[in-house]
Amino acid sequence: MGRFHRHDDGTVHSHDHDESSHSHDTEERPGHSHDHGPDDLGDHSGYATGRARIEILEDIFSENDRCAAANRAAFDAAGVRVVNLMSSPGSGKTTLLQRTLAELQDRLRVGIIEGDIETPIDAERLSGYGAQISLLNTGNGFGGECHLDAPMVARALAALDLSTLDLVLIENVGNLVCPAEFDVGEHRKAMVYSITEGEDKPLKYPVMFRSVAAVVVNKMDLAPYLDFDLGLFRRNLATVNPSAEVFELSARTGEGVAAWVAWAVGTSPGR
Amino acid sequence: MHELSLCESIARAVTREAGGRRVSSVRLRIGALRQVVPDTLVYCWSITSRGPVLDGSVLEIDYVPAAVECRDCGTLSELSRFTLSCSGCGGTAVTVVSGEEMLIVSIDVAEAPEASAIPPA
Image (cartoon, rainbow over all chains, first blue to last red; front, side, top):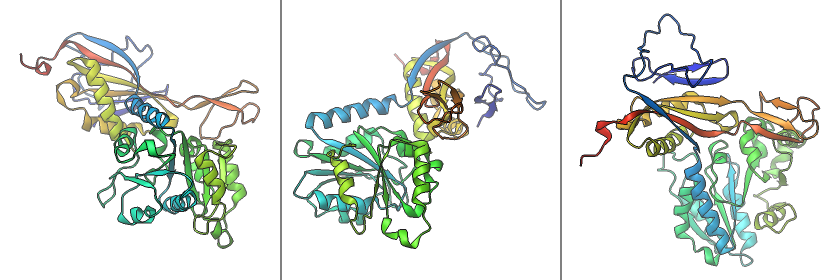
């Protein structure tokens, strides 16, 4: 791979010194200079032929974002609200979904896009509540995708009949980094955080915590057995996302789940 | 973490814009808040940039620091860690003004199309 340069102005780039196709032409970048060591003997003779610069100014995510907009348009046309649920692995996302489906059974028509690394166990746990479930194969049994993107969700929609649904919950891949970057066409992003994960998580994964409208604080039933400092967690969350709705609950016991469900379906004031 | 899939997106957009001409460099503008590791992106580009148009091309990454502007006192603060507060008044009514960039800015191409990149008539 190429050499990696970090310039005083914060610019970084890399180039291979065994390539003759890279010149340090400063014409378009005044003040751009390199501090090369004595071992830099690459060919800097520049181009044998002329070259041109093409301005692009295109967002790297534009492909994904166009697809996300199409997904959103399909949801809107069918009058379906869509929540993208993210978390770290083991935070209780599937248990919360199970509770949510149980609460909404016979009240609302729900679809699930199950994008987390697929195991038969998760699918089994979510069946039996009358929800339409679309499984995305994001793993092969040895790990797999680190996030869902808009094209994956578009593929998952083939297995859902949106015209017969009111709410779609997307279970993203358990990961606090990548899923925050990809718009999949949802109306709201939410995340499940559990109190066994430590109070500093919002500071370690600020992009994720900042990207969501709601944070579920799960496993509150374990509070008596842990040294978890809820006040400290909330202060940390406020430094990266002061406006997030917070729902303290236990997906295991069901305590506090009703307020979350009201938010998820869009009937609570902070929706 | 998803630098490889970003490189695949970049490769598709760059190939489309190059119109068969050989690309020598690709200039990106990436904000500090976008969870991209520049070294990893460069490494992934070395894997992704194959074929007559992209082979040998290099990524130039302008890494943009994160900055917030205070809605109360107007101070512009550069962030070294992610805390949404103003360095001037300590307030939290701030707007992120830079650090979320994720752009392909421009590409440098040879003026004549590569003979090998032109499909046979």
